[in-house]
Image (cartoon, rainbow, N blue to C red; front, side):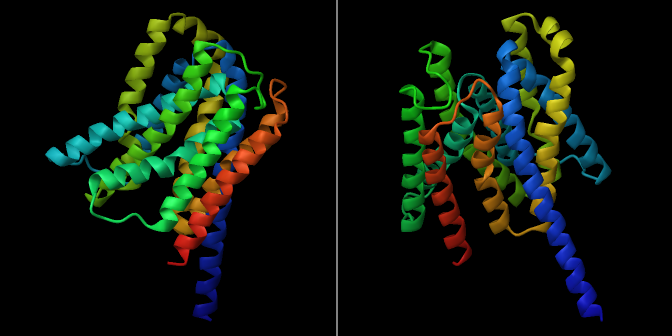
Length: 311
C-alpha cells in the first residue's frame, strides 16, 4: 500500500515538473514574439532594466524566505560572482537587443546553436590535454552549421523578416552570437558557484545586479527614459512577469522535479515554439529556410540529449 502511494506521489511530482517545464518553454516563446513586436517603439535597454529589476527583487524575496544567508566570498567565489553578473548581462542584453532587429525564432535558435561550440572551445582552453568526445564534437559542428544557415538566411532575405541593410541589423545578428557566448559563460560560472554550495534560488537572487545597472545607464544615455516608462510601463511589467520572471521560476521548479534529460529536451523545443508563435506577428512571414535551420539545430540538440542519457 505504501509502495503504491509512494509511486503515485512520484508520478504526480514528475507530472507537475513536466507541466512547469512545458509552461516555461511556451511562455518564453510567446514572450520573445510579443516583445519583438512591442519593442519596435522603445529601447530594448529600458525593457531590460525594468524586467530584471522586478525579477531580481522577486528572487531575493524567495531566497530570504528560504533562509538563504549571505555567502562569505573568498577570492575565487568573488571572481566567479562578478563574472556571473557580467556574463548574465552579456547574454540577456544581447538577446533582447537582437530581438528588436532579427526574426525571433532565428535569435533563439542561434543562441542555442553556437552554445555547444563555444562550450567546447572553453573546455579545451581550460583542459587542453583532455580529448574531446566525438559525440560532443559532432553536435557542436552540427548546431553551428544550423546557426550559420540561419545567419545566411538573415543576410540574404530568406528569413521571415524583410532584409533591410543597416548597422542596427548587423549589430542584431552579432548580438545573437554574443548571446550564445554569454549564456555559456553564465552557465559555467553558475556551476562553479553551485559547487561552492550556492543554491539555485540564491544564485538567481544575486546574478542580475550588473544587468540592472548597465541597462539603466544605457537607457538614460539613449534619452526619453521617462517617456518610455510612462507610455509603455504596463506592458513592460506584464511581459516581465509572464515572460521573464515566471518562465525562470517554472524552469527552476521543473529542474527540481524532473531529470536533467527531460529538462534539456524541453529547452531544445523553444526555437520551434517561437517559430510557430511568431507567425501571429504580421511583420513576419513564413520562411522554409528558417524552419530547416531550426529543425537542424533541434535534431542535433535532441541527439545530444538522448545519447548522453544512455552513457
